[in-house]
Length: 403
Image (cartoon, rainbow, N blue to C red; front, side, top):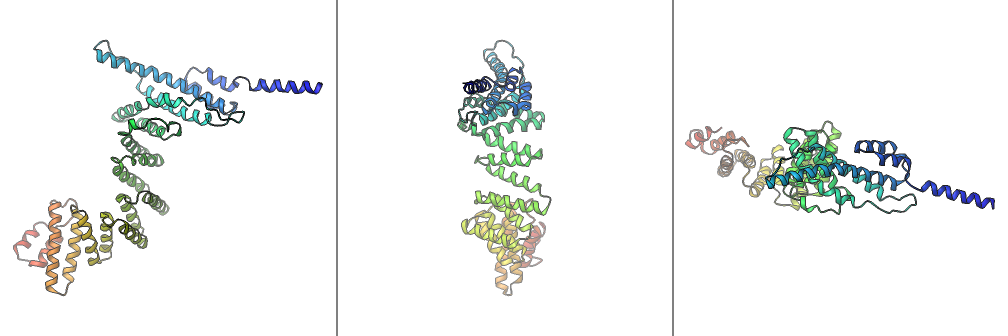
């Protein structure tokens, strides 16, 4: 009997231990402000009984943050009604307080969801706070507008905080079921500029994350890729950095092999590292898959130019010009390659014919870029006219004026 009584007492003690909230959780739930509750939660997180209690604590943080959001958005609504009705004065509201509270609510929702989906003290997963995502999600767009206003004020840290929170939250699993379509027209642009602000803040990991989001938007993709490549390249300080960058470019190329900007970036790195074998393989394989790739054809031609192979250079540059007939740089180098061929030809008649082709290329470059802002075609064009018509021909004299 005595033994049974001891067992019964242990059962009662155990039941008492699991009844109600832990003291650490109670302390959090008594806090009146978000700052106080957050501090207590961080200090006592290890003392909170289990995952269910941790979820409950973070849910309380959401309640406190959303109370502030409701107060400020309520004032905004009142102001809008007053303006529409032409009655009463608009009231001031705490703009940055609203934005900070939204950020807090988003952060707490992510943490609440994490613990809410973990096993409780009994080893069971029984989510209780899944509706938090639904109440927090609709207020996120305020971060875009407030971030834009902070950009006008020059508050770069605030812009990155608010736009970053807007983008980061959309990537969290707890918000995956929310309707993302309403923001699809502007999320790419917000992500791109958030990436630029992150780059300026020297937070490259965040910058790349936001550029990846921006690249999902067809309207933003090209600009995001170009700036991402620029940002990544500007961080190179050692040979190992270059190797890491090449590996990143390879990954980007594998993910999107038709992207001309990535191809050009990878080609430039191979060229700079003097890895001719890798550069050749890259361009040859790309041309095999994409015969009309302007960037691959042009870079193949420039490889030949750098190797002083005028005939090979002219071959590829001519193909590049056929694909993109509005590029003055390609026509300038094409003309230069043809001029070299003409000058080296032992067949006078053939040489003159090639000079004519060179002049056609240079004239096209002049037409596209009359001020030589993109390519310095002037002197080479004069040399081609000189080679075909001689020094005193009026056409040569006219070309000399442009050199």
